[in-house]
Length: 451
Ligand SMILES: Cc1cc2nc3c(=O)[nH]c(=O)nc-3n(C[C@H](O)[C@H](O)[C@H](O)COP(=O)(O)OP(=O)(O)OC[C@H]3O[C@@H](n4cnc5c(N)ncnc54)[C@H](O)[C@@H]3O)c2cc1C
Image (tube, rainbow, N blue to C red):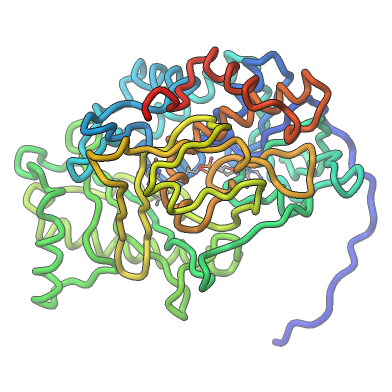
């Protein structure tokens, strides 16, 4: 059947279902930090999320691990992301849902967590600040006051379609949905249009931890061996196989989701992401067989969870007032308008592999500052964009997209939106020193005391 034409929907008046001072789209790490900060600065804040819980890729895509909270500062591995994140982590630890940090290639640290603890701690954090949450609400369009100013976000909720008016908007959707609807320029992919490959995450239970030992060290060699023997095949070289906090539970990051042409699946393409879910589950089952067949300690494991959605690493990135580059990450760049730091290296999920590129460690300070201007879109005045869709080159995004960088960006966006309201100016006109003072007052570390 060939598809032709279009259907004209009747024009309609959409009711205003809420008004707020700051409206945050998306409840991932960037959105959580943005909403908590705007509210902490005394502004009426609302957060819209299409799922019934917070955490973004961290929960919905089963990431279950914080990267980018630490950096290797001249040979010493240190927590470098502070502020709102400290409170979130404390709440997760109090729920017994936060692992001790573990080493990454001996160079930095990451920290695994339980999905349920992240969801509950994030709820409690935002509610304690008075943020209004609207779950099961999918944003679908922007209504503009004029071509530079957003009037309202249009959402489809379980009670129908509605408009939510605000004075300042923060796009923390990961995909830059609101920025794109409002007409802010954006890009997608590297010079060849290639995106980072998505992954469907899963966890297994009932692993014999004593026998599994440090399985993360030899999983790649065992995969190579199985591949050579022809017993199993894999979507990419090596796998991230790590123990979680509670005995017998491990997470697995190994699937890689490609379009039929071989390029990465595009998370903003409805057909592609749908097919990726099915292919992802096929790859999960195939790798689960390998684990039970070939990895000591995993013989009696069961499939504990397959994440609710394919994990999307990269789609749209806005072209903002300043674009963070790979040279900034590898050269540990400083910016006068620093809002915090990124200590994670370039982590590029390319066809069949993951390519890591680090700043010189321990010779360098091991982190770059993130500039306020990377959150400022072109053309739209009352919008900030935080998280994996902020203004970064594709390569730089492979670093600063991890949770640590997203918390930093979200925190600055929330306080920045509040300052703009305080001063009756647009975010591009706030004074960075005033923002930096507010961030530091709320515990953020801007990386200015390490040359
Ligand atoms: C497979 C995978 C493994 C990863 N591993 C790690 C890791 O080990 N450690 C780490 O720190 N990071 C990791 N990352 C990266 C990290 O999880 C993400 O980059 C980070 O979560 C991005 O945060 P964000 O807030 O910008 O966006 P997201 O986490 O994507 O959150 C965006 C939120 O907005 C909501 N949303 C989007 N559009 C709409 C809409 N139109 N209406 C309503 N709601 C909407 C989404 O439901 C989501 O909750 C991984 C990512 C993937 C995909």
